[in-house]
Length: 566
Image (cartoon, rainbow, N blue to C red; front, side, top):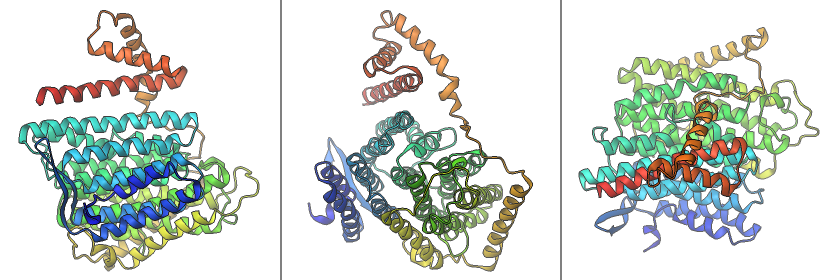
């Protein structure tokens, strides 16, 4: 196999595993060099299918290079390099290995030419990314990491079950466009939806991302959900259900973000809003809409990564990302403050910044397709993002009165600032010269974002949102920042079902002899064994043990499908 035939992502995966055996300095050089080498290799790969092998009668395609996969490959390698620069000061072998293997698996997934290869990378991203949460080494991060891992594995089980059913019905595992008319495709759709944070399947995102390390959250924000958007664009373009799913995704997180105290959770909700825009684009399915989804994924990785880096730098210097602990940092961290404003302008879709030139593609597609209610919902979502993220985060961190004395606070380390500068520069360059991005989109749609109507509409939205924020602050009508934890649908598994699960587990324990060989007996045995072996008690046991039972239920469902349908 030649250099160009090597599946994209393998360089990062192999290098990440190698990093486990290297000393610090060599690991740092390796982490910087791997994305550069991978990007160079990607530029050398010709279009078409590569690394094609036959496995038990199935055609496995290690890499499929076309316009859709390339745009995701480009931004994933860029994100891996910027993340490596931001991470350079960290002395943690676990994070070094997890970050590179995670990035490599995500890149491998977007170039997978068949469903089975996709599944392998899909699960690898789940396992490796979880260590970026565990690496925070707190009880909260461990619990969140367990919940995250269980949900991600659930996504994989649904995907695998759907693949088996689809193969049984069609005799093919080709990763091409599908419809929701078959049970296999529907199950795969749900599996992809879990990872894309569909409404009611989304709580893992605001739960886990704020619990990751300062640098781990930067990597997490770049890969998992954008990989899921790619799989929807590849497998289900033009699926009308996605239009409404995306519209709801874009609106409902706004209300929780408004009252959330943890600013990284605010960013997680904002990330869901941006995913909603992308999903709408995929659902509309026209060339312009799919280009809009791809462009918004590209720019979103940059400006959301930039804002997560800003909050990571603030955590590094102050130890907190909560609004009630921050304020008054503009003078202490002027570089971080200025770069935060660029990220805020980009996510708010200010003209001449990256978010503007990608979001307008999707809004135009919605209007052109006659989806006026969806267009209005996306406009409302735009207002909410400006309010909660574009204005509130810079204000709470840098311009609000200081709410807690952190002692002397200095600017972020040089590598952190450099990484933020790289992301901010790309946000500005793409915003000023959108053609640099448009020419690499899957369909290279001819579109002009800087028309008088687009600019005036967006400036009005920005101006009135800013005035509303100022008025609510001055009049005291803005919700006060509180240290309370905001619960939404996750109340069901955080609190509502705990007593139910406890009763089920106790009953399963008492009757496991009679149910020997039955599914509930297996679940009860696994739950009890988990609690005894790991030595978990209290809230942690109530979180992990039920989740373990669910995991085993889904794994057994997958095995059942494999045996029955094969």
